[in-house]
Every structure is written in structure tokens, then in C-alpha cells.
Image (tube, rainbow, N blue to C red; front, top):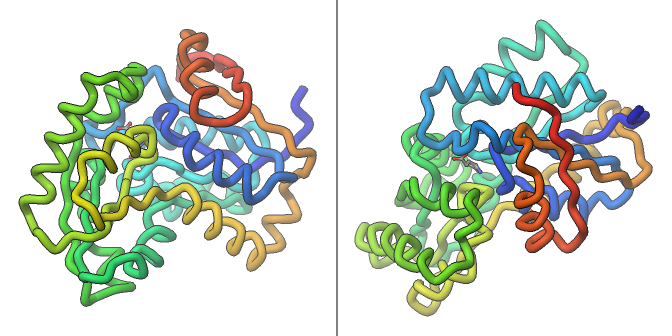
Length: 276
Ligand code: DGL
């Protein structure tokens, strides 16, 4: 039915659409297929094994749709499942396909945004506990101090559609205050969860002047564009009819369509693919 070989973009829920939007902007001709595992989101507080199992199931579904390349547009999955998928799973089942994450491309450039050498990283419990950003940023910017803060209530707020309501401000302030207490030198805050750009206006409103907020979408999209230029053998496999397809593991797609259409500037209609 779908005669395409698209780039697969995976997230636990709707947050990955912030990455999808940037990729669609930079690669308008490439076919794109989004999968959100909404019925099992949030992933943030789950164990390593569960996050790996869920992510690999979703990646396999995307590969079965013909994707030559899958982007884990989810920091939690990138932190906890990417390495096992790249090193153990994929070489056995699909050695000719590629799965890439969002942490490394972000770590490669984030140091360029700070003047004080102090970065705040906001992420899920899983991403923060993995220490992946501490390790990766150190590799590229050893002189920079990274201050992490987990924000476990933000993804549930976003997945439930409460992110633009006044009640969300309380929870935004709660975690920002905790982060800023760790250092008064932080001048750059990385949204290390693809859901958080939906709270970006509220986050910016609670920050002192001069602190800038960096979302990952454009960074990841640029890095992907560079990757495809360096890997024509992968790029040439991806079909280019400019199609966009949005899939989910929840049957409750009406709410999803509405929320997605609010922050991605096109009409979005999710297809329910069944539960994993
Ligand atoms: N959006 C995902 C991330 O970038 C995780 C959200 C969740 O499922 O907890 O980390």
C-alpha cells in the first residue's frame, strides 16, 4: 500500500514531532514516517530493559515499513536503547539499515552556545540518570560544566494536553528553580527531551534575562542532513515524494491530531497501527 522507503522518526509520544518538524523543513523532498508509542508513553521513568524492549519493537515496525534509516527522536531511548540496538540488534536482523539518536549530534554543538561555560540540561529521569549528556558533552567540550535537572512531571503534562494551560506554570517553575539553584553561572539551557519545546514559552518566561533556551530539532535535522551527504549509500535508498505519514500505538487519535496540528504547522492525521 505504501510504496515508499521513508526516513523513520520515532518517539515515545508526540514530542518527537518537534524533531520531525525540523527534519521536514530541511529535507522537504524526503519521505518521512513518524511513529509515536503514545499508548506506552512516558518512557522517562521506566527501566533500562523496558525502554530497550519498547524502542526495539517500534524500530522493528519502522524497518518493516521499509525505512532504510530510523532516527530515535527521543532522548530517553537514545540514552538507554540506542547502543544495544546499534551494536547487538541491528547487525543481526538488518545489517544494511541504520538507527541514529539525538544525544551525540546535540553534544557536538551545544558548547558553542555558552559564554560562561555553564550549561543546564533538562531531561527525563532516565536521560539524566544515564549521565549520557555529561559524558558526551565532556568529549567535545571538556572545559564546560554541565548541570542536570530531571523534570518527571513535564512529559505527562504535555502528553495530556495540559502544557499550554495556566496550571503548567507551577511545574515549569518548580524544576527551573531547582536547576538554577545549582549554579548562578548557567547561561544556556538545553531542552534534552523532545517534548519540552512545547513548554518553551513558559520556560523562557520563568528564566532570568540573558539565559537562552536551546531546543534540539534544528540541531538534529542539520546533523541528519550532513550525515546523508556523507552517506550517499543510505541517502539514495530513501524515496523522495515528499510524503508525511504519522502513526501511533494508541487508538485515541482525535486528541492527538488536535495537539499535533497545534504545534506542527500542517494538518496531522494519525493512523492507529495497533498496540505493540
Ligand atoms: N520525548 C522523550 C525524550 O526526548 C521522552 C519522553 C518520555 O516518554 O518520557 O526524552
